[in-house]
Amino acid sequence: MSPFAIALVHHPVLDRQGAIITTAITNLDLHDLARSACTYGVRTLFIVHPVLAQRELAQRVKMHWVGGSGARRIPTREPAMALIEVVPSLDDVYAALGGRSSVDVYATSARRDDRKTTSYAEGRSRLAAERTALILFGTGFSLIPNSDNNPANGVAENVQATIGGVNAQVVFAGVAPGFLGLTQLNVLIPDTAPANPATQVVIKARDRLNNLKQANPVNISLQ
Image (cartoon, rainbow, N blue to C red; front, side):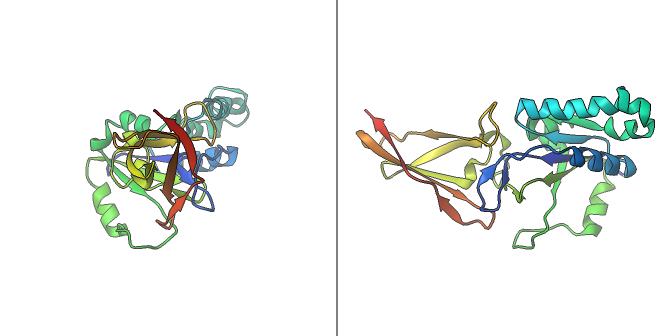
């Protein structure tokens, strides 16, 4: 059986309305997933969060049970909590596992839709190979689909932008570094966008049902 890891992703995920958010790490998730990982032979449990303060919190919980007072009080919990690795992004997970091209990635869902799914039999057959497997678990209401298989641009493929009525390229959509729940969009201003002291910018993003939802327009000054 191939080695496999699991990752609990806190960004980018969706809320009830389909907006991109960042969720908070919970103590319960750390313990429950660590114990399950230890029981079923998972190599590493990655906790993925872009906000430093949240990663530090998870690391403190881990160290309480790995070499800390918790380990001295309940030593049997230490092997499970030792499986936890706290990282800023999925890119760090892929790097730790030898690179994205070296990993077979599985994502879970409780919702049936038109996307291709993998049967249990097919999954077992793949796990019999030598390649590392990674199972992604989302928080909030859903993982954001990264349909272009390019993690470097975040979820830019799910965002559309116009500037002064001209289509503009979204080169990145994801969490703003150092901020909890704040999404950053990097958009290239098209050469044909009209110069105007009040040029309208319109952003649309796909929700968890793949519907485009428009944010409130804003105006910028283009010279």
